[in-house]
Image 1 (tube, rainbow, N blue to C red):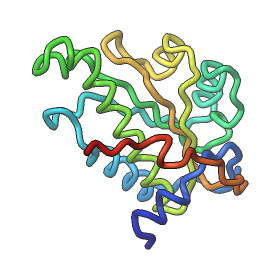
Image 2: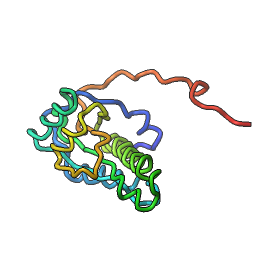
Image 3: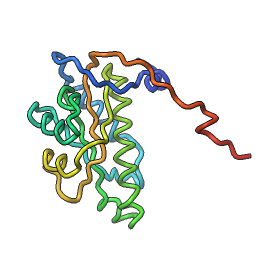
Length: 174
């Protein structure tokens, strides 16, 4: 098993998946458990995750996501939705506008890292029609789709993408 630093270094956006390699239920369960282990404001977990594995539904998500083919190609697509009302009951407007979004995105990031630790790859998709995604997954008006995470076994090993140097991103206050 990889340590955390190796897991993070091996996380890449995978846009081609092995068609004949489904995600095993126990691995999917472990990924979802890790997503739900993510920190959240007030431990409220102000989000909902919908697992989309049926081909026609993944095709509908592909259409909702600007036609990005890998959305349908991946054997599983996890739809992370913020639940602003859940957060607002405790934290008011800031919970509604920020904390629920943070909760959902942190959970999605944990799911991506868990997929790598399980020997798979993933891609974060943020370019989608919110209403169309909501319709595909049958989400009520109270849930806000914020990320699609495509998960499966990679059929590619993408080149590492350059990262900005730390001194451009980090400031140390003295």
